[in-house]
Image (cartoon, rainbow, N blue to C red):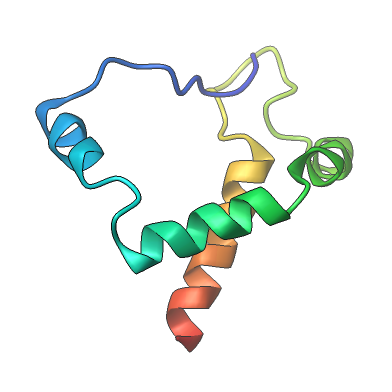
Amino acid sequence: MGFKEYKRNMSFLDLELSKTLGSSRTQRFFKEIHDHIRWEPLERILMGVYPVGKSAVGNVAYPPVMLLKALMLQKWLRYS
């Protein structure tokens, strides 16, 4: 089965948003977080305990690191 792929063609919205990439405080903040956290060790731990995506049947799953990042973003938005 595996996990969802993220390589896709850019939409018109993606093209327009790419022009502003890195110019907002929020984007710079998240880039700084991404650069300072070592995601590989977290990914190894999560892959060991995350059973979804390892089955031969069913829908493709989201990678656990992406789900962790979404949870962190959700918590950040809630307390900011």
